Amino acid sequence: MNESSKRSTIYFEPELHQALRLKAASTDRTVSDLVNEAVRLALQDDQEDLAAFDEREQEPTMTYEELLNDLKTNGKL
Image 1: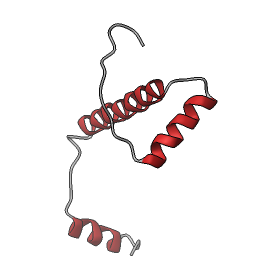
Image 2: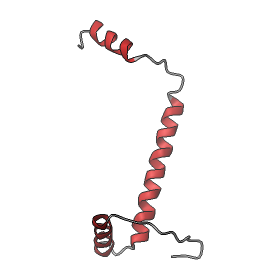
Image 3: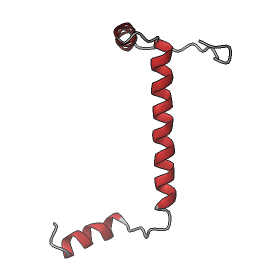
Image 4: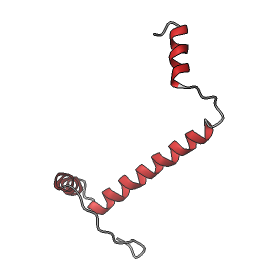
């Protein structure tokens, strides 16, 4: 842990905590390293999702009913 790290209390379900501790031990990493990596990956996924929404913002939309009618018209239903 470096000086710029912040401390936080996180409550894990017992089974998750045990799994984290076992994974940390078997990979020679700390629980903090594993949690930081998981949070970082989750935030990257969110960023990618938001970028995809922005890219598709101008696409036309259709209602559920229109979608069903289109599928039926095209022989998909």
